[in-house]
Image (cartoon, rainbow, N blue to C red; front, side, top):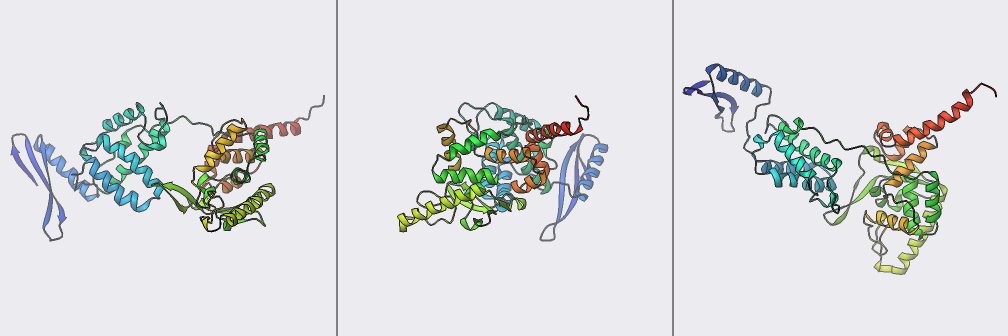
Length: 385
């Protein structure tokens, strides 16, 4: 229905069903222009409503919507560590643009927000660095969280489209994963033999398994079959809201059984004896954690502890500094270089797709190809002299 309100203004009304009391609900819009413009908008409104795209409730501010999204989706469906991260990232978005009506949010607002991020350090502790500006990879994380939030707003018919999709996604420069080559790894292991048995067990097992840090600290002794050299990876520990929590692995493919080497088994056996002696010594003061790696009084180890121990060890022995996660990269790279199949490596690492393995470790894949070419040259070279 169209009503003329003034010389160049029309009111367009469409029916949009009934409320809980059976009362007819209508949507009104004021249109400036000609009667032809009003009829065109009426047809558009009817089509949008018919296709389920018409926006009935668009009174949210950015802040009120983000608060609702965090409650209905993030807190209800995601893991604790992810919830903490999303709240921090979304919080900065709200601090800057929360006062706006959600329906008035434009690509320009978002572009300015991302550019402002590029000019300052993050408020989030996970991204903080002394005099260090945010990287494009970090800004991409803000972009991804905002995009998910606004996609849900479209899905829930709160806004008609996602303005973030009209903004170019930040594209960080791809960095090759840092890792040790074979000789550096041998040197690491030689230095490791001079360390405390606990440090030996942490680093050797991480390198052998090629596991994630949280997977390592999540291991219970019952997950390790020392007789057959099999480790079952099925959970992780994380530090969230100032406490250590346990949860299932990253995804279904991360649940896996991994064979480990005899030298690693021997170190773990020695470490277990050391831990058992510590339990006897501390008696009722022992914390009782079932974890393989614990604090010195038997409580859960903080997931950051392996990283700190590893860095201190590298400095002590004047080895090239890499982070703890680089042991995972080193493990994968050595396997690729030794000719282990990508599918086998992918399963060992807990990747859902072999393409993930190839993408992350492309540098080692190229090195393996060079080795293959060298060997093939010897075979293919039929010319004598």
